[in-house]
Amino acid sequence: MASRDTRTEKITKNLACKLTDTELKEFGRKLATKCEDIASEESRQKDQKSEMKARLDGMEAERTSLAIVVRRQEEQRDVEVEEVFDYELGKVTQTRLDTGEEIRVRPMTNEERQQPLPVGA
Image (cartoon, rainbow, N blue to C red; front, side, top):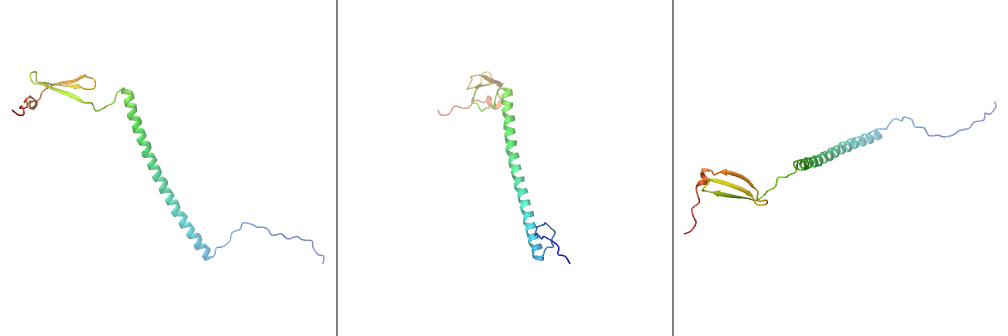
């Protein structure tokens, strides 16, 4: 019998292997942990999206308010107003103290027509 010329090499191949009970339990534990991690991350991202949406909604509301002011070229502000009760004419005149503009003249109500009594004697 003639001897054959051969060569042997060791290589590594990725092949399916049956898991032991211990390995199966470990993979099950890792799977459960990963499911919890995913649920936690989804919840965190949902919360962040809600916060970002709330911030964006606030910015949009402010933008709308500013656009109204620019379009109307005026803004609502608290302004001191002087009311003059003219008992002779039976009218009340309201005048802006910042501009001196008369903004309203109206008839006195029945209650307003009652002049206050002088205080002290």
